[in-house]
Image (cartoon, rainbow, N blue to C red; front, side, top):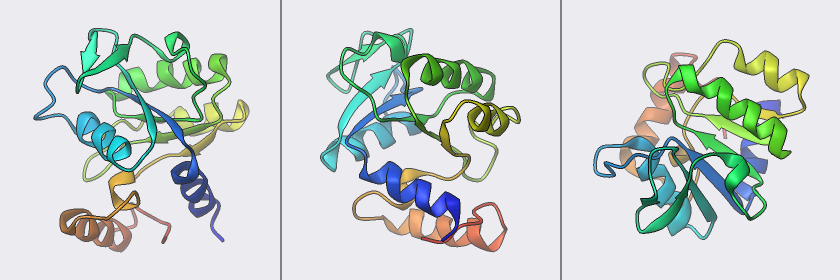
Length: 158
């Protein structure tokens, strides 16, 4: 099986997920939607935003190292310029799984990410969205998954 498929299967089997890049404006932010999707599907989810105290009624942490509970994986929904900082925090916190959000555009993808993760033992899913895999997948994400596969932006097929 494709190594990315294996990483996706592993990531969605994790129980403690941090979402880096949640927003103080939850109605318009992808990170908040994904945070809620994980939470609604039984994951222990931790919101990460250095400029927020609370997200969706839950405590928000300024960075990964400030989360008091173990974190198994991190979903990254930040600007690409912040992605490497989050991955460096993953390394320091001993977090072995990371997923960088990307859909139509580049999303949070940073060109240095894959090399950094490979060199530091972090299993990386460099593109895509958990909304295409977690729980009941809605129609728009089914369509998006199909389009991304056809265009080669999602070169794996779970």
